[in-house]
Amino acid sequence: MSGHITLVGAEDVARAGHNMQHAADEMRRAASSLESTAERIVRAFDDAAQRMQEAAERIELAMKGAAS
Image (cartoon, rainbow, N blue to C red; front, side, top):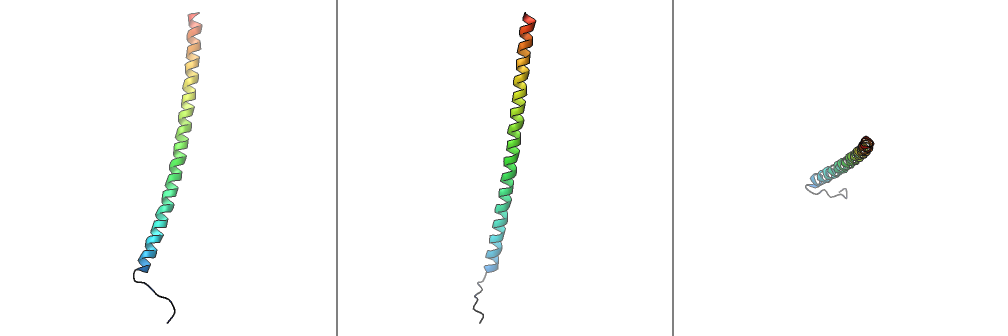
């Protein structure tokens, strides 16, 4: 005897564990990608809001100048 015991279905359990690890890795990558995308969207909205604020200030100044 070799001293090893092989359980029926052990390969299936090992394969399932590997598949679960692979799925967890994919989920981590997806979460990281979503986080990066969300950060880019927030920056884009912040930039757009800043440009809108600056445009509103220029319009306000122009209207005050026209009223004078």
